[in-house]
Length: 425
Image 1 (tube, rainbow, N blue to C red):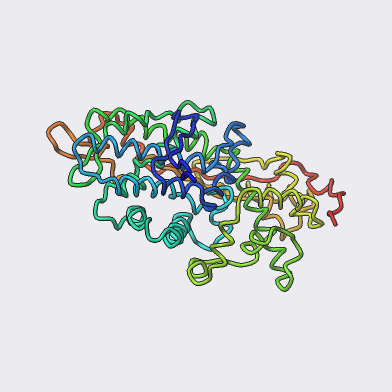
Image 2: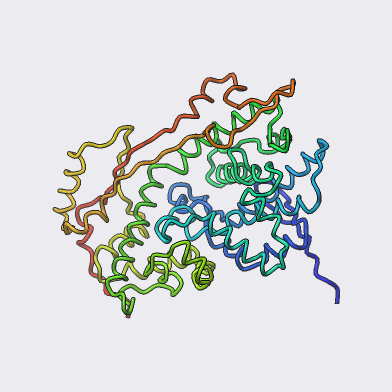
């Protein structure tokens, strides 16, 4: 029987045809860990604002792998020695860089786990895949965690000008319809070069890098940190917070709030990195989690007898969203006290007000030269930072951390008035 053809071509709406270049990469794409990313939306709840934002982490990972392949070809064409094994490893590393994301991507990262980042879980899953594939991912893992002897590979995977950012800006701009997300990734990649195995951009690519940084700033405030996104995400976090509270009230049986077993595990327990490292059940359970577990639970919880949980769930399902106020300065106590008073009048108990009134802050900086710099190679061969190479004053402005404070709260003073449905038996 003939061996199956594992060099597939996929039609991507952003880049056109994408090739899966090797059999190992094909097998990784087919693996359940990676297929799970089909069931995790790239932008969480952004479709509540931009209805087209329904693409998934699966799309994004394949797109980033495609861009990595282009970067390898560019660097090889400029005379840099990069072996076939290194090319494959770099594409594997970027393909799997988000495999550790949980449901709703970044939204629930700090709600489901106890200070365990998605990058940490991605590394754990890559290590598990390396065991399953007889050590064939060792080089990719070293590139991913920054221990490989040629640092530019890690810079292409995780830096301020990496293939991850190039794809998500392009892709998120495309699916939201926000034209400012277009960054000219192909031109930036064509301008990449190496100096002492460090990633640089040729001087004639400065304008493209400036556009990339501007696009990132605009996309954050217009899309990722859009005020309605903040409201949606705050509501989802409070729903999980309430469900966790109710489940832990009945710690012996965990039956006060029903959920899929793997989802309930992370609601009932505070799972730390040590737990992942010492008990395989947590990593196995995590690889079963996706957006559908959360949405299915929310639909069921909308009929729960607990008024706080059911009200929050119905509000999110019906897009009856919190109202929000943004400010460049912290809010005075008077506003919070007034909103608290309104919620009391609506019938919200004192101990439950924090579920319907959320304070926080959002920060963004398009470029942080104190971290991994974006280096520009001048015609003379000198390497300088993009902030020095650019003649635009706003590149320096982009290095400033912008902070916005917000208060969001439940609108409508009758949020408990319609609790007349009975839970499903």
